[in-house]
Length: 136
Image (cartoon, rainbow, N blue to C red; front, side, top):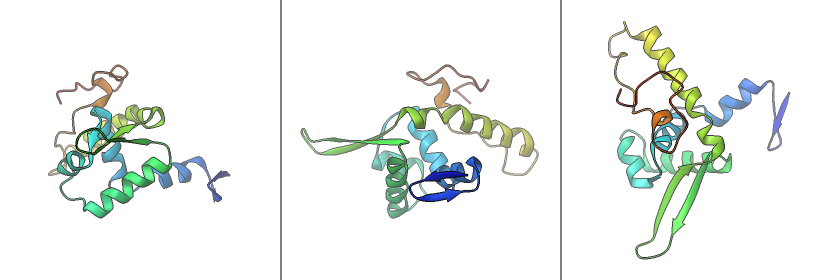
């Protein structure tokens, strides 16, 4: 049994899926793994997400300690989002999930496409442990 914020989860997998599950959170984490991004930069990388949904997902990721929000007040105000250490620790896991999908479903139409550049191999991050080049 896992307890988090007053909610009981049957197991750690149920808890994990409550934190990173859904259509957008893993993609947001993946893109922020490459570099810190402003809201509109992230929105351009995820053209199908609505502004409201991106705002909600970023707030949840921030509340759960995976994303950091930094406000710059000098000059034109701007907000930049980046991964916390906890968020960065998910990058090799997400890379493995991407590799799994590509190996298991590559024969399916429209499933063999490229994944976003690997943040695991990006400058400032741990070495590429997924065995996938950043250029893929």
